[in-house]
Image 1: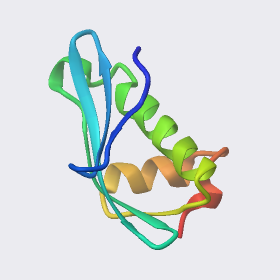
Image 2: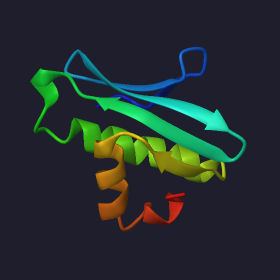
Image 3: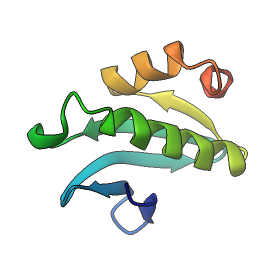
Length: 90
């Protein structure tokens, strides 16, 4: 597993695993991060790659003092289930 990469020019977080890239598109407004879309390539689906990505994105948001508003259904469900990061839900 690679580390989280943030590409602010594209408003995208990325993580590479097994030569494939999972990503989360986001928008920042003040102290709020909107997660618009989370994608995991078919080869990584079911492996937990999207969950590892979300965990890293949520930790980055927490470190920056941001709240998260998930637009993406997967991101919303993941945050609601997370004991460590559900307090970030805005």
